[in-house]
Amino acid sequence: MKIKSFIILSFLFLTSCKKEIAEKEIAKKETVKKEITKDEIIKLNIENKLKQRLKNPDSYEFVSLNLAKSFTVKERKETITKKDLEQLRELNKTISSPDLLNRMEVEYSFLEKQKDVNKIALYRYDFIAKGTNSLGGIIQSKYSADVLNDNNYTALSISKND
Image (cartoon, rainbow, N blue to C red; front, side, top):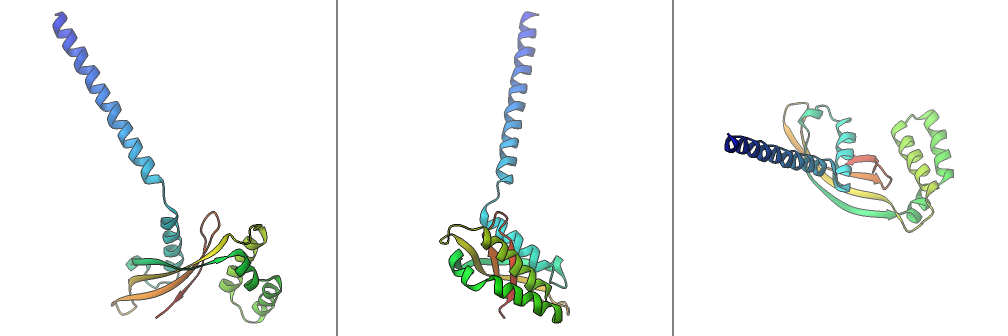
């Protein structure tokens, strides 16, 4: 009887240890899945912004993404000034361009807060994507995207290069 009890207790102990080890491995894999890289965040932000413009966003397929250029805070502050922002706000009253105005306001707000003029402020990426056009054909297009180097890697704008 003692031997049977010992065997049963041993079996229960071993199976509970295996279960505990398996649960730890699953938790470890889930943690790894949750850790997302900067490039993956940028890719997702670009995809989300592009899908808003597509006629058939469900057909979107990412092909490639390459960093073309990066700009420092100093370089962008020379391009995005308060005067330019005010002029665009005035122009927007007669010729509505909310996307352009929003892009400039977001970037200007980011640049105002930056103390280190040598910090990267903006990334320009070239990327290729496939999708279905309005006639049902699959097309592959080249794009450029400007991504702000903020905590969220905000995709400011996307332009088609074809």
